[in-house]
Length: 184
Ligand code: HEC
Image (cartoon, rainbow, N blue to C red; front, side, top):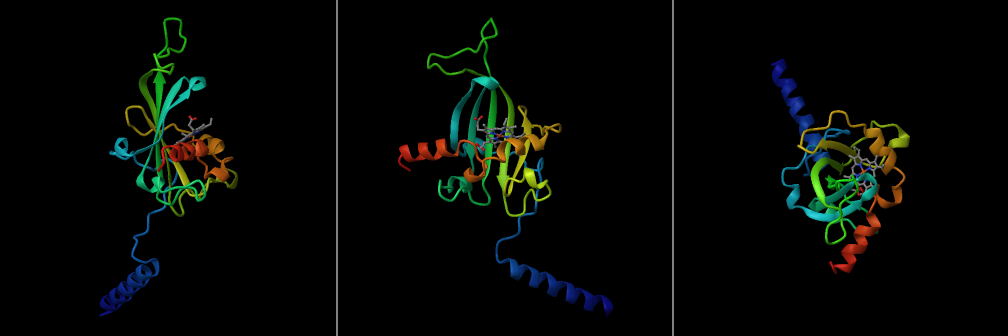
């Protein structure tokens, strides 16, 4: 009898809890290092491609999921947005200098790392105030797709945090300018 009563109360609580949250199931809160690498990201829209980073000896390709694709220069990016950035090492010549292709651009060698940024309500709330970047969290993978267990997420945050009025996304202006010129 006791058990039946308890289960009735418990069921009632669960139902009340769900109706408060509406039809959308809650996304569990995640922290840095807990995003998984989406298997299909290479099929996502490109945010920017072949970003030339001679200083870092890298070429970077940035992909965005469908939610991020709904972002705008006025509103920033909606909750649910994810960016995946491939960091490619580049080829060097025999003297160790950066090799350039016929197009004058750096030449991709091996995939060195894959960086993710994702946002959802309540994500990343456990970081110190100075490192907060809205609801964005960060995760780093090695070039072979394994999680980089040694990533220092405070460095990701330290670099991205100053870009508050660009939704913490570095090449915000460059991206929205390219979207405009493509006539989307
Ligand atoms: C030294 C500064 C710096 C650090 C540290 C840094 N980033 Fe970034 N991040 C950038 C810049 C600059 C870009 C724009 C692309 C470029 O120019 O290379 C960028 C772009 C990105 C993007 C593509 C979306 C966007 O914001 O443009 C992701 C995803 C990302 N970084 C994740 C990370 C993660 C994860 C870490 C930590 C493991 C990290 N970043 C650390 C400077 C930094």
